[in-house]
Amino acid sequence: MTNELTLSKSKINTFIECPRKFKYRYIEEITEEANKYMLLGTEVHGIAEEIAGELIDGNKIEDVFLNLEYDEELEDHIKGLEKFFKDIYSNGYEIFSVEEYIVDEEINMNGIVDIAIKNKKNNELILFDYKTGKPRNISKYKLELCIYKILLESKYPNLNVVSAGIYFTSSAAYRIANFGYHGQDYFKLQSKEDIDDSDFDYVDTVVDNLYETIDRNYFKKEKGFLCRYCFYKDMCDGDFG
Ligand code: SF4
Image (cartoon, rainbow, N blue to C red; front, side):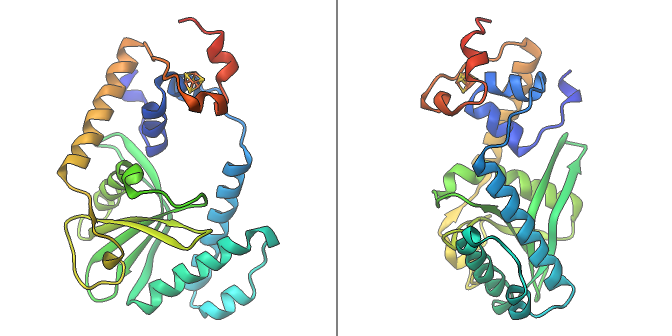
C-alpha cells in the first residue's frame, strides 16, 4: 500500500492538517466538492497560464493584457498578474516553464509547478506558486516550496533553483525564501527568509510519519476550529474508528 501512493504537496499538507481528512480524501477517495475559493484559484491559475503562453509566443505584454477577457470581479487579480509578469521581464528574467507537471519516481512524489522563471544571465531559476487569498507569512509555505525545488531540480539537474516564492495575485504581494543565495537580484531582495536543511528534514519527517500512518491504518482526528469548515465533518462526527 505504502509504495502505491504517490505523494504531492496537497496530500502532505492535508495529512499535516488532519490525518483523518487525509484518509477520507486520499485513501477512501471521497471527492470534496469545489468551494468558491477553489473555483477562484482554478480560474486565476487558468488566466495566468494563458497570459504566460501568450508571452512565450512573443506577444507584447501590453497587448496581452489589453486583449485579455475576464470577469470584472477578477480585476485585482489581473492587475496583480500584470505587475508580476512585468517584474519578470524588467528584472532580466524570462519564463522557463508554466504549469509543469513533474513526477519524481525515485522519491515517489509529483506536483505541478505554477511557474518557473530563469535569470537570462545564468542557470538560476526561481519558482512561484500563485495564491488567490490574503498574504500570509512564508513559513506556512516552506514545505511545499521545498517539494517544488526537489521536483524541478530532479527534472533539470543542470539548473539551480535559488529562490522560491508565493505570489498573492489579489494584492500583488511576494513572499519569497532564498535557498542560501542572496545578492542584488530583484526577487532575492524581496526576502530575508531562507529555506535551509532543517526545512528539507521536516519534509522527510512528515513523509515518514505519513507512510507509517498508512501502514498502521490509523488516521487520528485533528479536532480544531478548522473542523467547522471541513467537507467531511458529518462523516467524521459519525465515525468512531
Ligand atoms: S471534521 Fe475535523 S477531525 Fe474530522 S476530518 Fe475534518 S478536520 Fe479532521
